[in-house]
Length: 164
Ligand SMILES: Cc1cc2nc3c(=O)[nH]c(=O)nc-3n(C[C@H](O)[C@H](O)[C@H](O)COP(=O)(O)O)c2cc1C
Image (cartoon, rainbow, N blue to C red; front, top):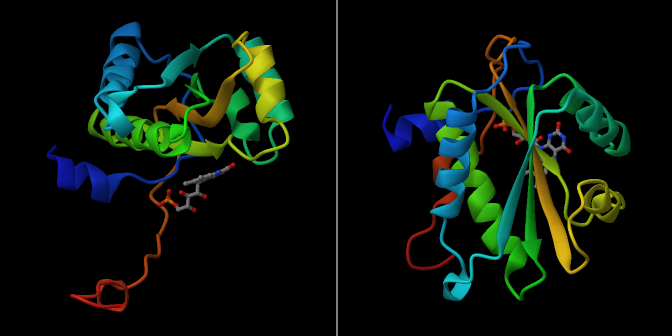
């Protein structure tokens, strides 16, 4: 699958088969994340791959709209050192992981971290030091749901040449 196809195919998946995600695949996902651009190449990110069902359940309970993390075989917490561009850098890594996961046949869902009231609670739960920000949680696993229809604003509506 080429990059454009993976970008088009990616969708948020919230129901997963119980099939575990292998360590080899987890490494490929994090490898994709670390090749994201970052301001001044600071690479402020750290990735925590959580497979333990009890920890996933605790994370799921803390989130507002990430209850399905309890059922996803893998949850990747993306944390960044609190640098000037931590959010942009972290989000670039998250998107790389989502696209790579699609290319590897996995479904994912980005679950909000930064700005959420629970961000610091999850950071502490996962043993990350203070000075780190939870950018996002990524639920991942083999999809157990059909393709949903997705809406996107029309290209003609959003593409401007030269001026807004
Ligand atoms: C910053 C951000 C936060 C998100 N947080 C959640 C979330 O907490 N729970 C959830 O189910 N989906 C979350 N999503 C996924 C969006 O709902 C989803 O990407 C959007 O509806 C478009 O659907 P698609 O991903 O299938 O194209 C989040 C996405 C982004 C980019």
